[in-house]
Length: 260
Figure 1 (cartoon, rainbow, N blue to C red):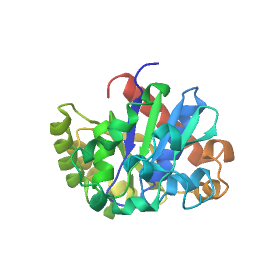
Figure 2 (cartoon, rainbow, N blue to C red):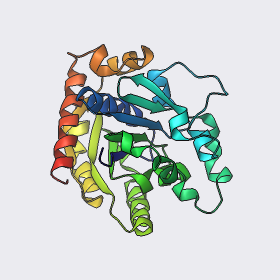
Figure 3 (cartoon, one colour):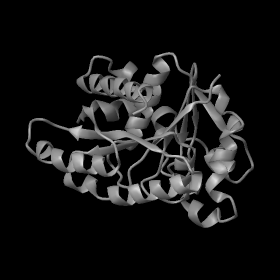
């Protein structure tokens, strides 16, 4: 199997649909016949809670991979056929303090080298900051997707993300492509989202990318599917927001195929 395509989902602001996007993208790619690994790199463990009940405190997790006590293969959980999850851990909150040794920015890179050939795609849900966990994710990523809620507050941090990605590129001496900005929590019944289009396009230009044509509508059914521990594609296959995400996945694959 060829080297997998690794995609980080990132925004320095929380509440923009980052975890939802990561979970549905992974499930959608899996539904199209790909073997997919999800990595919950956010100490809030929201991606983990999308698929499994809250694990006991002693459950092996990504934290134990970072400490060197476990391999990714030892901590991954099978969600369904060809869809695996490395669960997050609240202990990762102290990552910036705990992992200060030499090589700390390549801990995930080292761990992935032992199993990356098993997968077609690896999707990483990053925390809403640009600390050690996000840097480790960026260093292994081929692409970054930036979800942004359709409100003015979500535009903050784009410049900082750009600066961080530039620094990572200098470290790796290879470019990280921002696959696109994804507008979430979108509603066309107000003028707010439309008024922000110019600002969002400016943010995309700063990151040398484009806004995805797909717009992810606000929908309570997203939370319902997560509570039910089911991916949206199975929980509500005919919902409008499901259609939004299917179109988004189509765009992701198209952009990857044409090299962005």
